[in-house]
Amino acid sequence: MLTKVYGSAVFGVEASTITIEVNIDKGIGYHLVGLPDNAIRESNYRIAAALQNNGFKIPGKKITLNMAPADLRKEGSAYDLTLAIGILAASGQIKAENLEEYIIMGELSLDGSLQPIRGALPIAIKAQEEGFKKFLLPSQNAKEAAIVKDLEVYGIDSIAQVIDHFDNDAPLERTIVDTRNEFFNALEHPEFDFSDVKGQESIKRCMEIAAAGGHNIILIGPPGAGKTMLAKRLPSILPPMTLREALETTKIHSVSGRMREHVGLMAQRPFRSPHHTISDVALVGGGAYPQPGEISLAHNGVLFLDELPEFKRTVLEVMRQPLEDREVTISRAKFTVTYPSSFMLVASMNPSPGGYFNDPSAPVSSTPAEMQRYLSKVSGPLLDRIDIHIEVTPVPFDKLSEERKAESSVAIRKRVTEARKLQTSRFTEIESINYNAQMGVKQIRQHCALDDTSKNLLKNAMEKLNLSARAYDRILKVSRTIADLDASEQIQAHHITEAIQYRSLDRDGWLG
Image (cartoon, one colour):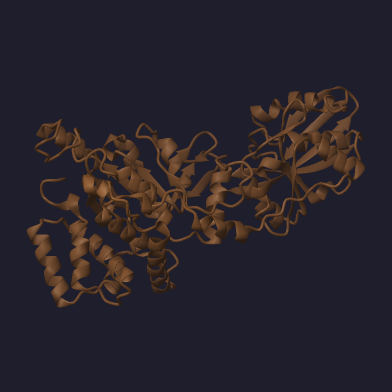
């Protein structure tokens, strides 16, 4: 007897439907074909134990299971439940009507209970596109899949529930998620808030500008000045994600298995902070079966590189192209996977190996050779992609001991969101540009026109401060954002003055 059951395979952030054909014939043997990996080949042991512990068995006949399309590589243990239901239906141990309406996925434990799977959201999106009506999967992933409209999602705890549903028409509890309500509830309560930060008004202003224009930023200062504390709070002032952005972000985290259990849509922008020992592959993604790296997990959010010069030079170099293209493509002999990676880069560094550059009372000082070696790790092309450089100084005691609460993230975010709305309307006709940081030379010339006063000011600054040529466009982009925060049509002289302050590393005495 031949039975067909349906599952799904995930490649990149997209899913492909897999048809599992189960044929039972005379003879003895268990043949699993269709390019399964080791985890799937081992499934017969898990399935046999799970069925036995629930009063069923694998029939002692010749069983052939084909995972079609047969030339597509399948991986992972999420097909256990699909294969088990196929075997029970084909051997006549359970009634199995309307199997063609279902996508079934789940990893079996030996007692028949289900373990969570990866990629539930892309699988649900594909199932809905291809006209499947119902999706059975482990209850831990049900909320994530239930985001998709027009697909009935049922969270299952054990294979016994599925058998009962097919054999005895036992009803299953459908998982329903009010996506919009869940999404907007999470927006008003950020985990980290700028109201916790004492002092550092100028740095908060700098963060606000970076958030408003989507500018990459580097913080330079001695240990304990508050660089990490400020960076962690940046996602809380970024404009709220749109539902489309939230779906994109949730898909990537779903595929990589990073979604928390019983969580639906990710409403908060991601904040990723990899350790400086990270490898190239872990940062940009890859592996035998390519998985998203840290830059893709930070998509629509913030990637924070603490102690930037401590990262390996090669790691920093591989990030240059994704910073420019806002996606990363991983190629293998038989297929290519593209992951989105549109993130804000926030980096921090000490001004010297000892951390106390130019401080006469410093406990540790560094030689000129050590300084040069330390700073040379972050020169050139990577810095070229960072718009704002700001020096962070330690907070004095009287500011630390103040009782007064600082401005909250929600208040700052309102101003940032208004500035982003101006940018959205400005770049409506250009699909690849959404905010000021993404402007190319053509857009800079068009939207960053200066009056004579501003031109003279910028010319004098570039000559006196020895600013590099690359700083010119960056200053114009940042001044455009400052003007947007002031709701100003034209860039004024004071906007240029403020933008010039944010190019510390371009000045003589820093990075040659």
